[in-house]
Length: 285
Image (tube, rainbow, N blue to C red; front, side, top):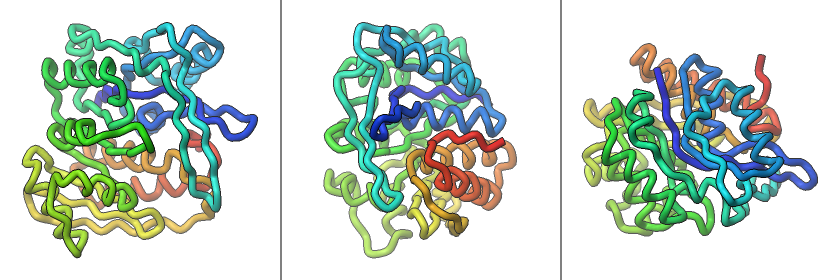
């Protein structure tokens, strides 16, 4: 399976420590570790962080052919963790805001899955790159992790995700903010909520609804089937990158086996390992 993700390359700043991150980068790294091939469309600065980022991508086995060096600083995010829960201050502008998409090369790469979210759409130039790929390339599936960051999303960026995703990931913490845009009817039960989202956006075939320590629900739209996935108990150090590892493990197992139960179990197990570490991409070997 080949994955192409467009999005942010960021160094998460924890006090005096800088750790490589960014949701699509974490996702791609975990996909490679789970047996897939993955490439990123992104941008880094002509600076030390940019050089380090490219080195990390090479270490993780993520293809860098679509990563450009541009005239802005490499992305940074100030992360504050309280009781294991992170809050994010994403700095701007950043190199990934200025990326372009080489459509011919993207087509030649021949990815099975195209992945994107809302943060990469916060500037019009990078949002256009997302649209260009969607409009000019074909994929078996389009995966969107809504992944809302304060001040870095709007109704338009969320709608682009919802209108194009065939597989959608959404957390119970993010959903109330998404609901405020009025894209779908709210509901008293999570099952009805997921049905309302799928009814409003008919392109969606799977919804991954994550609920932290309360596990997750996977909704198979075509078959109107729900898979309830319990969380794996672990000592939580940091939830940074947990959702990205969940997505990677789920997609890789699902495309191998087509088994929602196995895919959900793999996702829960990997995300539990990740939250037991400070790093979003810990060395789990």
